Image (cartoon, rainbow, N blue to C red; front, side, top):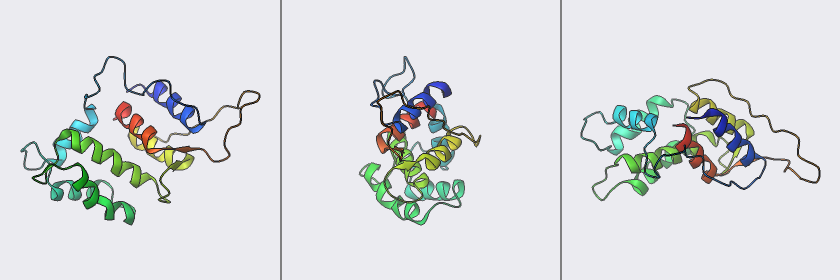
Length: 165
C-alpha cells in the first residue's frame, strides 16, 4: 500500500474535506482483494474449504484481538449474518466487508459511530503492522474552518481499509 497517499487521504478526511477520489491504488479493480485481507482469510479458514464459518471467524478474531471491546464482540453474530451467504458461510468478498466493519467497531472505543483522532491513529497503527502513527493536521488556509473535533466516518475507514490491507 502507498502509506503517503493513505495518510493524505486520512488528513483530508479529518479536516472535513470531501474526497475527490477513492484511496484505491491506481490500476486496481474495484473487486480486488487486498493481499493482507486474503492472507487473513486463508489463516482464519482453518478447514481450508474456501469459506469461513462463524466459529472460525469468531475464534480467530477473539485470538487476534484479545482486548476487543464488549460491544464489538457482541456485534460479531449480527455482522456475520449480514455478510454471510444463505448457508451461513463467508466468502472472501463477504469477509472483506465483515472484517472492515469489525475493525471499525473495534477501534471505535467510545462506540459513537466515528473514529476520533486517537482512534484513527490506533487503526492506522494496526494497518502499519503496529508501527505507531501520528496524524498531523496542517494549519487551515485563511478563511477555512477546521472542526474542533475531527473524525473518520465508516465510509472513509472503508477506503483506508481497501488501500492499506
